[in-house]
Amino acid sequence: MSINQNKILISGGAGFLGSHLTERLLREGNDVLVVDNFFTGNKQNLVHLMSNPKLEIMRHDVTFPLYVEVNQIYNLACPASPVHYQYDPVQTTKTSVHGAINMLGLAKRTRARILQASTSEVYGDPEVHPQPEGYWGRVNPIGIRSCYDEGKRCAETLFFDYFRQHQTDIKVVRIFNTYGPRMHPNDGRVVSNFIVQALQGKDITIYGDGSQTRSFCYVDDLIDAMARMMATETGFTGPVNIGNPTEFTMLELAQLVLKLSGSKSKIVYQPLPSDDPKQRQPNIDLAKAKLGWTPKVSLEDGLRETISYFSKLLNV
Ligand code: NAD
Ligand code: UDP
Ligand code: UDP
Image (cartoon, rainbow, N blue to C red):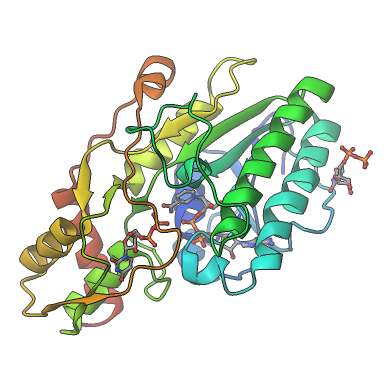
């Protein structure tokens, strides 16, 4: 990496969101160091960028210390889908908590600005709707989602303590459900599940009665908001919600995927996993005001792009 240029570390850069962020930051001419243990991400997500000499990829687990010289850090390392984060829940908490400590220690030493990819899961199963940043959430501390939810909550605590105690230049975004190309086809998240099932002519699995809601943001919109947050004035820490406030039931999502893919798959109903939030919609007033941002891509347009990606990937 050369002098006088942005040297940006992206932990989790080989994952779904991380690979899109890497692509954008390289396009802007930055030096990017991707740090990833390839648990849920893979090099395939970055292969189209590998000829760019400004990209460096390092196999490393963020639960261990890392000494490199950078001036910006995006901390994305953490499995995000319930199937993956529940596979080794202790490692999930370690990744969020020890990973945050190591990345914050690195930011403190190098005086780098550091952005945390937090999550709407910090609101748990909310009794305030839509969720503003001031809402403290309703999270079960001992359930099967807790390794992720509480890990991410503790990471936010660490970010704000490094800010108060060491004046670390922090930024925290709370990401709501995001989808798009390069989601892992088997990661169990609802958009990838429904699309893969529809394309393969398999049953569409709705958990519960399909009346629970989510608000889905297309990846390009999300990455734009993250980059804007990183560029805000020093002292503006967030947390800031980023996501698309248009809310859909899972039944509506299933019907839309069937329509857009032209699939003949039938819908089947399976048991609802425990602690599954009933509704989720971001209040994005703060993002609009501070980032000058609103999502632009409709669910229908975003699903078309995503269906086309999976159709090539699965060769169907
Ligand atoms: P992903 O699983 O595709 O990416 C996570 C990346 O982190 C993977 O490349 C994985 O290999 C890597 N990783 C996991 N543990 C690691 C460790 N210990 N050390 C180094 N690397 C490690 O998930 P994603 O959807 O791209 O999510 C990225 C970030 O955004 C996560 O922190 C997630 O919690 C957050 N987020 C995502 C969403 C969403 O809807 N996609 C919503 C809220 C928050
Ligand atoms: N750390 C790191 N890279 C650095 C600086 C620190 O990985 O460049 C790790 C370090 O191992 C430590 C953690 O970050 O465990 C927290 O660092 P901090 O300086 O806040 O705490 P301390 O070293 O005093 O425990
Ligand atoms: N879901 C579903 N069928 C699936 C996968 C998920 O009905 O095949 C439901 C899940 O129970 C939840 C919603 O879709 O209510 C979103 O699930 P996802 O795992 O994508 O995200 P999260 O629950 O973390 O928001």
